[in-house]
Length: 90
View 1 (cartoon, rainbow, N blue to C red):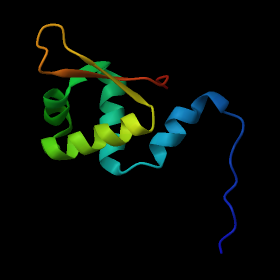
View 2 (view 1 turned 60 degrees about the horizontal axis):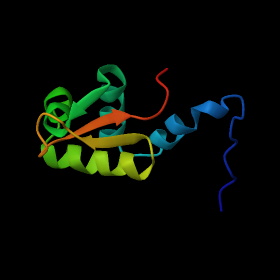
View 3 (view 1 turned 90 degrees about the vertical axis):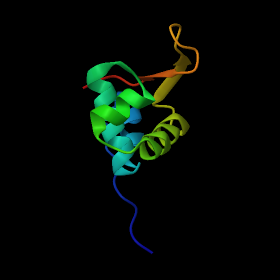
View 4 (view 1 turned 180 degrees about the horizontal axis):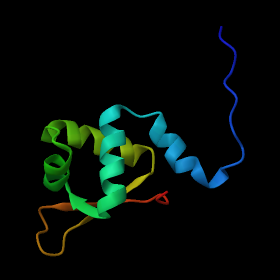
Protein backbone atom coordinates (compact mmCIF):
# COMPACT_ATOMS: atom_id res chain seq x y z
CA UNK A 1 0.00 0.00 0.00
CA UNK A 2 1.18 3.49 -0.76
CA UNK A 3 1.10 6.34 1.71
CA UNK A 4 -1.89 8.67 1.45
CA UNK A 5 -1.22 11.91 -0.38
CA UNK A 6 -1.21 15.13 1.59
CA UNK A 7 -4.17 17.36 0.81
CA UNK A 8 -3.74 21.11 0.95
CA UNK A 9 -6.38 22.85 3.03
CA UNK A 10 -5.37 26.40 2.10
CA UNK A 11 -7.76 26.55 -0.87
CA UNK A 12 -11.10 25.20 0.32
CA UNK A 13 -13.05 27.01 -2.44
CA UNK A 14 -10.94 25.15 -5.02
CA UNK A 15 -12.76 21.83 -4.56
CA UNK A 16 -14.34 22.05 -8.02
CA UNK A 17 -10.95 22.29 -9.70
CA UNK A 18 -9.68 19.49 -7.45
CA UNK A 19 -12.42 17.27 -8.90
CA UNK A 20 -11.39 18.27 -12.43
CA UNK A 21 -7.76 17.32 -11.74
CA UNK A 22 -8.87 13.72 -11.21
CA UNK A 23 -10.62 13.52 -14.60
CA UNK A 24 -9.23 12.46 -18.00
CA UNK A 25 -7.30 15.00 -20.12
CA UNK A 26 -10.27 15.51 -22.46
CA UNK A 27 -12.47 16.59 -19.54
CA UNK A 28 -9.76 18.98 -18.31
CA UNK A 29 -9.53 20.54 -21.77
CA UNK A 30 -13.31 20.94 -22.04
CA UNK A 31 -13.40 22.54 -18.56
CA UNK A 32 -10.67 25.02 -19.54
CA UNK A 33 -12.44 25.94 -22.78
CA UNK A 34 -15.67 26.52 -20.83
CA UNK A 35 -13.74 28.63 -18.33
CA UNK A 36 -12.80 31.04 -21.11
CA UNK A 37 -16.02 30.87 -23.17
CA UNK A 38 -18.72 30.71 -20.46
CA UNK A 39 -21.47 28.88 -22.41
CA UNK A 40 -21.07 26.59 -25.42
CA UNK A 41 -22.93 23.76 -27.16
CA UNK A 42 -21.41 20.32 -27.59
CA UNK A 43 -20.63 21.02 -31.26
CA UNK A 44 -18.99 24.35 -30.37
CA UNK A 45 -16.89 22.56 -27.76
CA UNK A 46 -15.82 19.98 -30.33
CA UNK A 47 -14.82 22.79 -32.69
CA UNK A 48 -12.92 24.74 -30.00
CA UNK A 49 -11.08 21.74 -28.53
CA UNK A 50 -10.47 19.92 -31.84
CA UNK A 51 -11.72 16.76 -30.10
CA UNK A 52 -14.12 14.30 -31.75
CA UNK A 53 -17.79 14.80 -30.76
CA UNK A 54 -17.84 11.41 -29.02
CA UNK A 55 -14.87 12.42 -26.83
CA UNK A 56 -16.50 15.76 -25.99
CA UNK A 57 -19.71 13.92 -25.02
CA UNK A 58 -17.71 11.62 -22.74
CA UNK A 59 -15.86 14.57 -21.19
CA UNK A 60 -19.10 16.45 -20.56
CA UNK A 61 -20.64 13.39 -18.91
CA UNK A 62 -17.64 13.07 -16.59
CA UNK A 63 -17.75 16.80 -15.77
CA UNK A 64 -21.48 16.63 -15.02
CA UNK A 65 -20.92 13.61 -12.75
CA UNK A 66 -18.30 15.66 -10.87
CA UNK A 67 -20.81 18.55 -10.55
CA UNK A 68 -18.53 21.08 -12.23
CA UNK A 69 -20.61 21.62 -15.40
CA UNK A 70 -24.26 22.58 -15.70
CA UNK A 71 -26.37 22.06 -18.81
CA UNK A 72 -29.63 23.54 -19.98
CA UNK A 73 -31.68 23.51 -23.16
CA UNK A 74 -31.05 26.24 -25.69
CA UNK A 75 -33.98 28.60 -26.11
CA UNK A 76 -33.11 29.20 -29.76
CA UNK A 77 -32.86 25.48 -30.60
CA UNK A 78 -34.40 23.01 -28.13
CA UNK A 79 -32.46 20.13 -29.73
CA UNK A 80 -29.22 21.58 -28.37
CA UNK A 81 -27.93 21.86 -24.83
CA UNK A 82 -25.79 24.69 -23.52
CA UNK A 83 -22.97 23.85 -21.14
CA UNK A 84 -21.57 26.19 -18.49
CA UNK A 85 -18.79 25.71 -15.97
CA UNK A 86 -20.30 25.81 -12.47
CA UNK A 87 -17.07 26.41 -10.53
CA UNK A 88 -15.19 29.65 -10.02
CA UNK A 89 -12.74 30.64 -12.73
CA UNK A 90 -9.19 31.26 -11.58
